[in-house]
Image 1 (cartoon, helix red, strand yellow):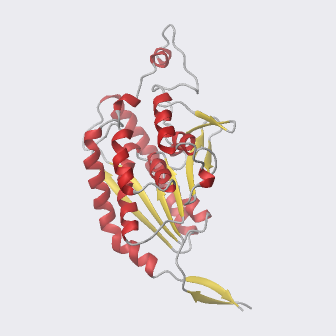
Image 2 (tube, rainbow, N blue to C red; image 1 turned 60 degrees about the vertical axis):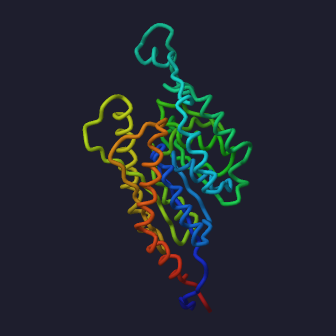
Image 3 (cartoon, one colour; image 1 turned 135 degrees about the vertical axis):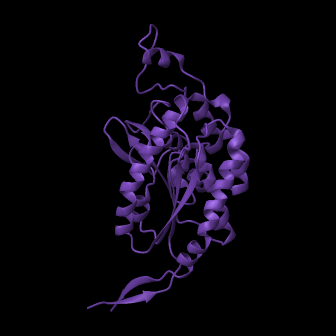
Length: 293
């Protein structure tokens, strides 16, 4: 009969970055900290805005490169309104709306992702990277581990009906937040020992004003419910350590608000700073249970 023995080895580290729109750019602080202690993640799992961050790191962009790109992600010129879609919502003449259309035209955003990620494919990335999406027509979670990075990043953050769905391998995919806003279970399934998860939390101090704040509040609450359901299950199934980092905001931030970038980055730095010692302890004190004859 085999006896359980303790074996010292480097833990497999998984990073999970959840939804949060442009606020997810705060996750750069975690990558900067991991770089400073010489830890390269063994797995990256991203959803929505967190998918952008994981894809950038998976494509081997440095944190300095990421910071330079952030202003490009927040360019208001990317967000062209599809007026025919708006006419259709109001049931007005000349309107047209279906799964391939949204309130925002996707072409400029998709072109920006193509510029950043080129023809790179998820299955070829140096660090294994998977992105959470949703088959909205079948109400199923879909985790992308292959295919063009640019398409996967768009799909993971396609907040329908704001942004149109995208058809990948015959499935119409939307934002992963609809099914798993903080996909920790994907890291558990892939046998990560230490899982570091970044969750974006927005608690408005006033009632939402205008369409953008109301829409953002709805998505934020969908994400909170999803994470609340998944996280306890992930903890119960996991064999070592899950470290949750919550980045807190008290106001909505528009996707094109480049002036909010310092606020986003500072919030990330503060949240990561509070958990540095816990991360170091979990990595340095990891021991695996091995069976010996």
